[in-house]
Amino acid sequence: MLDQYQRSYAANNFTANKYKGFIQQMNSLMGMVIEYRICEMAAFVSNSFQSKLEEASISIVEECVQAEYLVNAAPALQPRYTVPNQHAKPMFSTVDFAVTQNPLTGEFEPKLIELQGFPSLFGYQYVYSQEARKWFDLDPRLHFVLSGKSEDEYVSTMRRVLLGADGNGSKASAPENVVLLEYKPEIQKTLPDFICTERLWGVRATDICSVKKEGRKLFYQRDGIWTPIERIYNRAIVDELDDNNVELPFAWTDDLDVEWVGHPNWYFLMSKFSMPYLKHKSVPKTYFLDQLTEIPTDIENYVLKPLFAFAGKGVNVNPTRADVEAVPSNERPHWILQERVHYAECIYTPEGMNKGEIRILLVWLPDEPRPVPLVSLFRTGRGPMMGARFNKIPWTGTSSCFFGSEEVFG
Image (tube, rainbow, N blue to C red; front, side, top):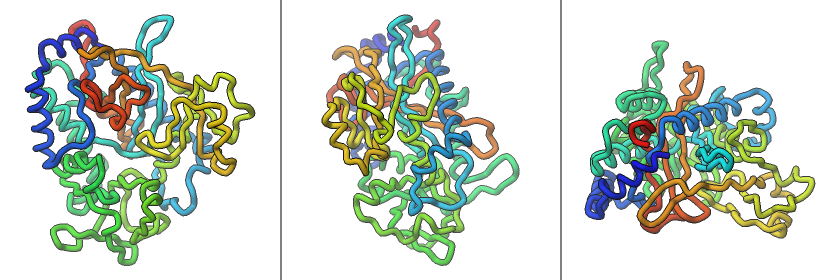
């Protein structure tokens, strides 16, 4: 972590007026008030820690496509949610790491918190990072795109992912034939990302309930015209659809004449459900409740989590033995007990040292041998949870990472 640059930023780059103007500019670009709290700063991270994050995220995603793992993960995918023509690899992955510190060496290390075979804020994080660099006069030698890619390469890679052209001559879909499907996108906190996605790549957000099915084809209304859908950038989360008793105009099990951009099955196959099976050194010990032979005597060193909830919903960071025992037997396969990860106080702020969590956003194109980390999302706070909904005081919230050399910025 680039502590000296973090301190220099707080002293020399940041002012309250700049921050106020930056927030106004972000709201103006989105055409709305962004609901989640944008932190006063990004995280400034060393190139060597970037390498650790990239290696860990790639290795973890690769573990999730191994034949042995997929056999173990199969029960996570319920028949009524199983979509035909599953891709062999998750096109999108997000891997969340706590920034921890090795007590013996003092080195910072990434520790897995959770993962998802599902997209995240690929559009918004790009726009945020560009604007933050301009508004706060960040050193141009700092970069925010991962895997050695330029910013132009980031935009073109995502265009290829969303619209579908590949290196083997396949024709891309027109942006108007690609939709971002979500449940009531206008009320989602991720709406800024949907707005950025349309601005950058022409892919428009559409309510999943508003599409029309004719035979094996789907259509949506674009500017008053029923338009055929060739590719679906799926952002609808089954939990939310079930919670709202949503009746879809198609069934997940339908064999539709569409290409899923991020096949929905991976939402279940690659999730907190994966963690008990993962072997990478960054993964904390994790157990399914129904497979526990006994509750650990040091229960204070564990966290209790539901498998398929999102945005920190249902997580118990201070479980007791009674909390674990209270989970009904029929629900126990859907809960995990995870070894507590101790976040390091790694980020300097004028209000004190913060903890941090870094999300790596990856894509895996069909003709690529490995998943590719593209960009990061950073969440920071001083409490036990790093999600934006839990951090609403000054110098906490969400931003992204900028990476640089220890020799220059350390």
